[in-house]
Image 1 (cartoon, one colour):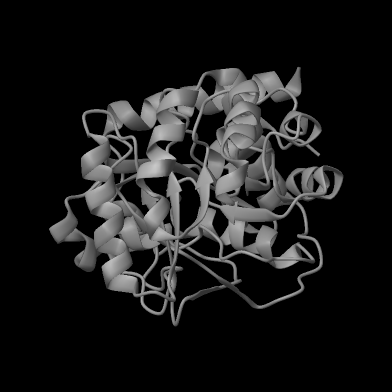
Image 2 (cartoon, rainbow, N blue to C red):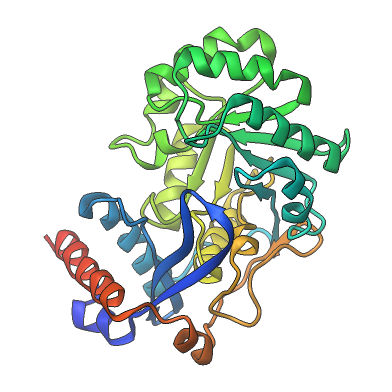
Length: 326
């Protein structure tokens, strides 16, 4: 069921939320929120994504707001801390925003940063977590195969849980996985799953050990569940720097997956300096609750995007809705 554009516009609210620290080159996060029959939902593809890619995010928003969610198998999910490309001395403060989390995902390969800086950041995380903490690194596909191999050697001493999207393409992932198999460090695929015409291509090519799945870019909870079943690989459910409403969608996905072997990347509301609710979905004792989120009207007003940005999002909503309708 595709609601009409008028129905979507009737409840649409566009917000701009400041971040605690710069992340993905952003200092604030914009999102368009909608209210459906089953509750509030979120449409927040990053600004650089084209309409064709963004349409999957709108399909996910409609799926969550206009359909019942699948049966839930748990009431909370374990989550990891997320460490942006900060200086080592800032690591402790970042981790403090994720109370109880014993896994940290560390951003590496950030443009303008060096491998030496990445190593120093991961070293600081290891020192903060201690030997029992788990560390995964995420390169967002920014290394080539040779750079990825070199970086994995440089980071080998920190006992990595896995390396997420070290290279951009499925072919490169397959090659780096073969090259570094002797190291025993699993390769996880993120962008190669969520930004691909064929999300299962990674599994078919034996290019990864783990799939990182996100509800919004994969077209919603039901679509993501179908992909995980077909892929037959362990999965990590993650977010895209969502508001607590988007995090709620991801948490419902994670709660519906039978075998959830890894901590989820659903603690990122802790990176927001403000949210749309006074009860944000932030980690408590290393876990995030699985529940619907209703925004606070006062916070929607306080963090309303500027008029030009609101109009930009509403135009985007209309264009992507037309794609779904077509």
